[in-house]
Length: 249
View 1 (cartoon, rainbow, N blue to C red):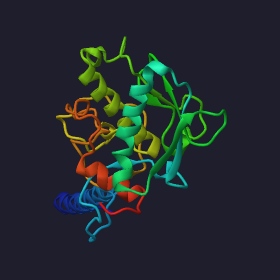
View 2: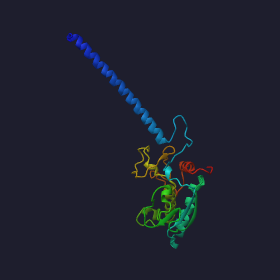
View 3: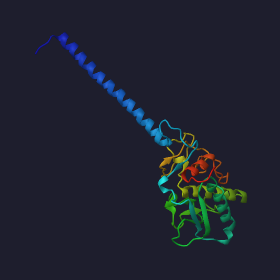
View 4: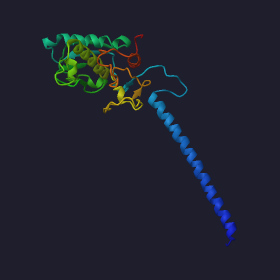
């Protein structure tokens, strides 16, 4: 069927306009959906429920699936060299004065390890301080938590004097025991600010308890972490209380 050019132009204009309207409507729908998706992602990152204030007003990131079944955790030493007796005492004092003070966690034992025994097996040597896993993943693992008392090659500035060495030993112990309880490096979080430039490692948490904590003992961007000798931030205290409840703050 033939129609005059003018009529065809009007019809074509209406078709194009209609298509544009549909496209515009689709774009608007996509934008709104993206906003909703982003909002939902933000909620997941914050660990919040829409319309509900978070129970904690603090911080923390944990691998909840690695939480210990019992908060009473055995600790042992793979070797007990006499020359490191003072350092071992600093470790026990720092750790027991940190995480258990705000939670149901209790570290018991602290004697020589028996192969295959339950709990955290600590090795001391010329290592980078670390844990072989998070939370209960270190259970029964030989050398599962490694500490350095001499700083001959790693963090050599810690050996500049005895007071600094003690602070470093205490800080490292509290930090690594944080991992052994299931806490991930704070600077690995996706919502960290641009001011934190530490390179993230591969460990990732499953639950962000609350917002970013610049003062956490688990945060490498906390420049005072080592010299604070393992002193927990308020966020650390609330985080361990949330993961292992049972003791008032």
